[in-house]
Length: 125
Image 1 (cartoon, helix red, strand yellow):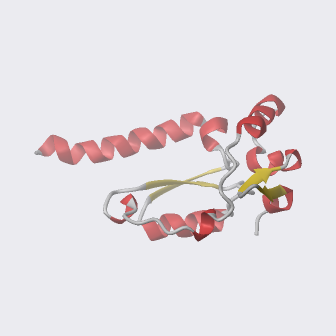
Image 2 (tube, helix red, strand yellow; image 1 turned 90 degrees about the vertical axis):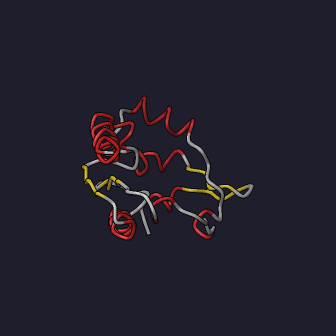
Image 3 (tube, helix red, strand yellow; image 1 turned 135 degrees about the vertical axis):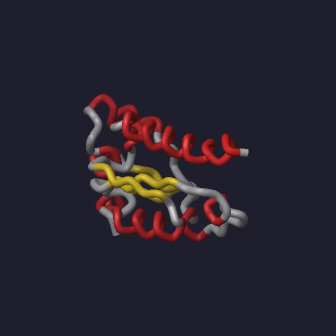
């Protein structure tokens, strides 16, 4: 269980983040950024973790994964488990659940590394 779960409401088949939970979701953002994140966040469907997805790409394609070490939305140990299960190249950063907002520089470096890694085999053909 993560801290954010004490700050959600399930209504209309969706999981809504209460304003009181924004620090657990995006604790490394400025107050202004947190407010924007809270106001624009997508509310996932309530049965998100019970859904079965067929044909997931990570079973057949290389994968990269960022573990957010200060994540209070998805526990970092669960992130590590998922990354290991995927066989992903894994990076760990001192970020909240939203490193793409708080540390886009780090996320872009991972994306560039992944793109270069999958292009190298093509260049040899």
